[in-house]
Length: 178
Image (spheres, rainbow, N blue to C red):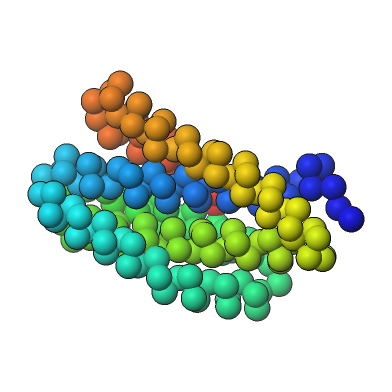
């Protein structure tokens, strides 16, 4: 039986789980405020958040099937980071069609990241016992890290009175995911 605490792979899965969850909860929490700062009404921001959440759904079906057929899922992990990165870059735009695309990309990245992190529990282990240990480790530390995201981003926005610094922090996290 593998000691998860000493496994580099287990820590990679834990980091991926935590960072993709941090991204999801941060986007879920702050997207409406980000959009309203960009000039969208509360209603428009709410609809765009709904679109982002809707874009998650197909990925939760597609990614597990694709990941299960692949020998190595590093490409999917890297693509998740890239799509998150492009989504946040798009939020920095003032063009409505780029913001619309960014919101869809963020949904795709969130769905891909979550599905992939759940698949890692079985794809990176050799038995159900190892999968349970890895799942417990990754989700415990991952969701603890994820809980810090919305708070940290909110504090940065309050301190700098701008979304620029929070975006930079998120972009750095996306590079780590990739």
